Image 1: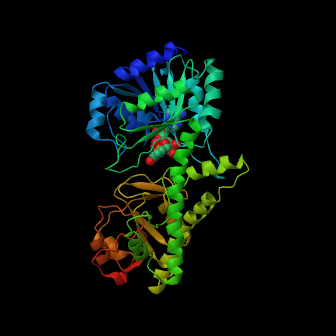
Image 2: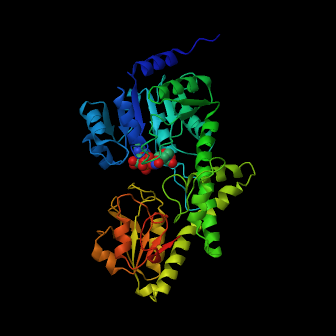
Length: 442
Ligand SMILES: NC(=O)c1ccc[n+]([C@@H]2O[C@H](COP(=O)([O-])OP(=O)(O)OC[C@H]3O[C@@H](n4cnc5c(N)ncnc54)[C@H](O)[C@@H]3O)[C@@H](O)[C@H]2O)c1
């Protein structure tokens, strides 16, 4: 039997004793909650955040991520367990380095790996024996082994699996979900050498109830992209059903609510104005792109993307129909969009279909305003829109209210009572005892 490398034994004992220094690169929706969780169990956490404003906010314990508890952040900052810096020159102090940077798409829907490449290169320049690097960002199968490993080995002159360790463990956070948090959401870990897998599994087991090791980093990468593709495809399926029901003059919500009473073989997914956020609209295209290398067309992904991207146009069409019924030309209409975030009760408006709906209405000459209790302003087609207050006067003054995001704190009964007409893209009004004549469901 081959003896374990001393670098591995040393790292494992620091992880188990919670004396390891944990670096978290990118303190956003994924990185900040992760950093706070690790600091809470006693690890010394050093965040590397390129945005100096965010780094400063962390050091002042000013919370900017909804899923992070304000008091938790305060405690770990005041106790000195969490600190943020902007550069990479303290990488050599870290035992574990966790990468949580964005993985966007280019304009042509191909992966933009520049964030991962840049931070890997910066880490590689300071890499030392005995460190574990894990990638949490969602990406295509092969990123860890084909992009990160060569960069780390060539720049540092060290060898993965002997001198240092690398794994992929995709983040599964569901922003706003109260029931499933980081702790009780099982976590997949994969690595292409046994020691990396062993030490990464040990690291994640310290704070997560159920860790699922898989045989390679590529498998772990594919697991995550598949999970998001599963959602994208199922959302597209119900969106397509909504388009069909519109033609057939059937109520898609009634169909789905009835179908979902089946106790097996079905899962609830709902139509809407389109998909948003950093995951569903982007991640499947990472897989689609990689599959081409194997001369393989991922047709479900392409089709789901096409259908989901069609939805904001459908919202515009339905808005036009309502305005037409009221005898108002779009260029003379005043429309209020309620909700700019891509998902209820969140402030995240990245890729939100609201921005596309607003841009379409704006292009049609509509006098369009929005209200979102979580999102004070948005950029749409080079214009800055600021959230307006949701007063009865505003509701009475507009010709149409489009419910784009079903935030819980909106008083929908009052909204329907005061508005002239409502277009509900989320089905949030379907169970309300209200004047249904005023409401058009998607
Ligand atoms: N948001 C989610 O719900 C979610 C869920 C699961 C997985 N993910 C994945 O996790 C990854 C991160 O997503 P996010 O939502 O946290 O992104 P984010 O934009 O909220 O956070 C990323 C952070 O990284 C920082 N950053 C960028 N380049 C950097 C650099 N060179 N050095 C240091 N910091 C840098 C940014 O300033 C930002 O604060 C993505 O791959 C995403 O697909 C996100």
